[in-house]
Image (tube, rainbow, N blue to C red):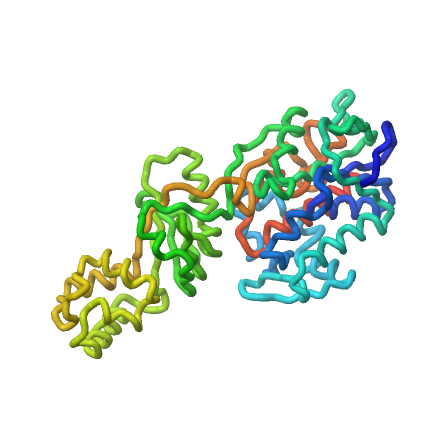
Length: 420
């Protein structure tokens, strides 16, 4: 650990050593500024190291129009930042520094090495290689101002660092063990900024039905899911779903969770349900034909032994329970009405959401500093001269698939560019 020296003068101070903070510090240093990055944890990039299950899904290769549709909250705010550092620019940035990338399902972009540490090393080198200084174990207590202008920061270990430009990139309030504990919101609020209420985004869901626990570990691939608030469709997605001991997770659930969390945090009165189509590639008529063929083949079997070709083994007992058909009933005795109920269950398998998992378990924090108080072209505060924002602390969030990290890198790059 480096020891800070009181009243050392810098041109740009960056608070937070995550994706946005390191990109901002590196960019400002690259443009010739004397830069200090302060990180409260014992190393930089702690959250980066666990993203994408340690593989670091740095961005998504979708073209611009498709890319922008993946930000359900204030996506238009990012237009200028993404034009300065697009997803393709970011891929080139890492490739030029020795991190080759690959594109996987859903146009997700990962390092070829599948190692997030390679991404962190590039960013640290980007800062230090351009003359920037990084001090870890240094938590900022106050951003100092004089007459509406930033003048420096004070840390909890009684160090004072002077600068007329400060970039606040402390992240959200999810995964607090990585350092994202919401400190930045307090710092911004103390300077007059408004904070949109925080809530989890990209978060697993807790389910009311007790039988969900019996499905723990079951992954359903190539299914579709729709989220309903009463009769209102909130969102829908196609892909993979995972049952857990508390409810459901997986890529499509994380996508749906943002609008579900918003409904919950707005204290809705209607019930929230997830409708799962287990056979989205087939029409109801095709499913009915499939059932008739299977039942003809297994006509002498009991109902409980006639679903092996249709469903995962773990799901069969639950499916039988919900169908209302006696498990020992002979297949050749199943009525047309009962078969229609099976078709309905296969295409509209309903579960009830009780809540999201807590914010601390969310991949991304929704809410944050109001975008109308930030200049979207420069990332500078409209309230305090010399104060800039970058990353998850801003009230912008995207779906899973590399979009949120791209937003962090792009806003960091914009802040670092304009703070010089």
